[in-house]
Image 1: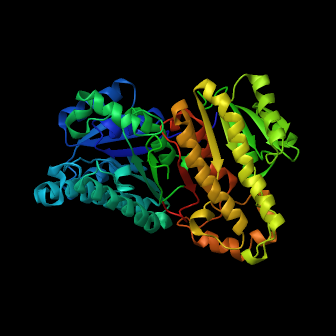
Image 2: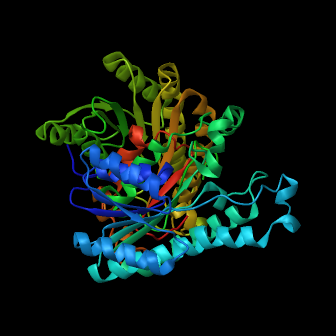
Image 3: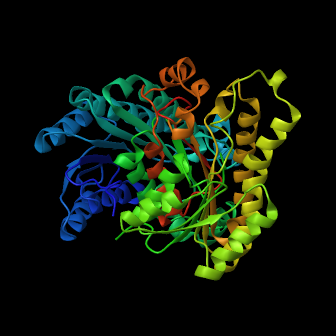
Length: 262
Length: 252
């Protein structure tokens, strides 16, 4: 069996890792041998996630982190890198929804509260930027690294269920991926994004788990006619983090059941 | 556990170059490879068997529906199913660079017959088998040149643009059957065919290399990880997408 997807001895740092896609990516890396650091603002969720990984025999540690604090991100990434002697993989995953879709009155442009807008920008856009800064700071000197940004198909194509703050910040991080991929390539740092479509995550306060008819409708909206389990992000993240993806950079890859078909 | 254990995978154009690298990569992950080509693919089979892998060669011309149907029927008769199809066979390495004004009708038609009709015929032949299985993976090989509008090989670039479109259409039509259809868009790759054509190397290749974020030549092995991913259950929620693997020349 080939070693294409092996991460033995690699180190990874994932933001928004207490649940959903962030947790799945961290778990996927750990299952392939990586030493993982999980960062999240939710202390209780974070502790449970790390305990679960360690109980499964993986090596995981927790860092309580709010990505609205750029200095704290730098300290956390640098700290994990110092602890393990290097940092191979950083995933800028933490994000929130926010702002109603344009199909609802609350989502009309005049009704978007600037406090809501600013908070989404601070987490989804500035938070990702600060995470990239922190990653580059440790990866440039080591002349290697992989960075993965969790974007969204909302950043690639808008629809009537898109809202301003979320959609615009997800579009912004896609340009961030492209710019960073060019700037960081001479340092052998590869930068890519994943653009998830409908996944069953806790986003929007766990609303999906309370609304089966919404799940059915969202599933039916994609060619594969279903929503995805967070586990299904693992393979793509692994491709982008491992030797299997060593010539992929600057790509934002939809994983969306065929919704965008880009 | 290997990622493609016991999967039955047809790879067209598997006798040499990128196709041969694909065959070896999926065999290393436990797949049973059907190497198909108009050339003799015995060499690829021998290399796979030397590594302890499993492969057979079936001669086939992708541009000919009779030949394609015979290939698919033969595979179903032998193995009872088809888990993945890789539409890799294409006319490229022997092409001469020329203005689109200079491309003759016959040359245009020859490129379209292999590069577009071929994958179309194979999708048509394989889809009923996969629909019955309610499972399957189709991976088409497109090209990064589509997104650049590369000049000098307009027939080739146009044919690969059709592959991006074919991938989208077939993905939407087969989604109900749990069949994933995706494409890989490589950059200029130093396969033995490319290396044997002076027009494909030299200054033109240097310009391509310098257009990349990662400024080095692309090798067939740079594509195998993505192919294994798209043939495996790891990509079960992806369909209709063309993945660019070119060192960051085209960014999407």
